[in-house]
Image (cartoon, rainbow, N blue to C red):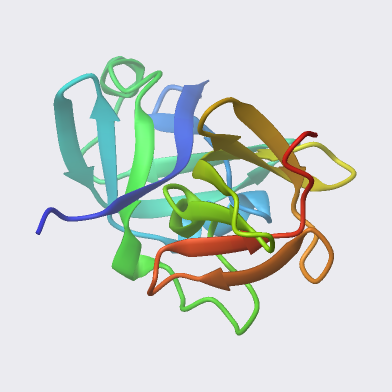
Amino acid sequence: MAEQFVSIGKVSGLFGVRGWIKVFSYTEVRENILSYSPWTLRKGKESKEVQVIDGRRHGKTVVARLQDVDDRDQAAELNGWEILIHAHQLPAAKHGEYYWADLVGLQVKTVDGVDFGTVEQMLETGANDVVVVSGDRERLIPFLQGQTIINIDLAAGEMLVDWDADF
């Protein structure tokens, strides 16, 4: 079975002249990205594993120092690379909580038995997160557990929703 990776950010620029990089973090608290090491950096078909040796919040961004990246030129080569970690590096989700990556690909069915298709992606809108479902057509369903989202069964690969098939 192939190793599963989770995207947690990307290298967004350079910081200083000693090889530090700016990081755009997808983690809920931005600087939490620094607690995961090693990172797997990927750009196109190329990837490499790197150790995070230092880092901190810097204004609205996060800066990091990677092992064996000692100058601005080396850091510049990493600009735009995606930051991934092994799925097993994430803490286990609490009961009733889910990682978005675990929801993508679930089969979505309504309480009336209508098959909507699969979860294509999750969107953060500010008000409510939204489940994007692809099937006979695309549907956007608010991620409201206990209201629109009735049950999530990761083992069975299914999400049960209370949503009008015509909407």
